[in-house]
Length: 107
Image (cartoon, rainbow, N blue to C red):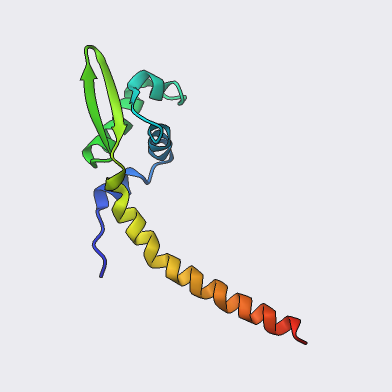
């Protein structure tokens, strides 16, 4: 049985939080630069960032009055491992489909 981390999976379950992670892939960003990509209140953005922070998916650093967030990509490993489990399923199914189609073409 595979070990999963509900905090990470819960954190990425919301599309806004996945988008925030996407924004942080290229480097750390101040909260204002993150917030300008969303049509939600600043407190709502901060709540989503708090969920990501609590799951360990981002870190927060204060530079004076500014808060900057940085992605912690290794925390996504449980997601990668979970998906890898299903990759084998898809690979097997695509192989069977290819064989089936090749047999059909031989007729």
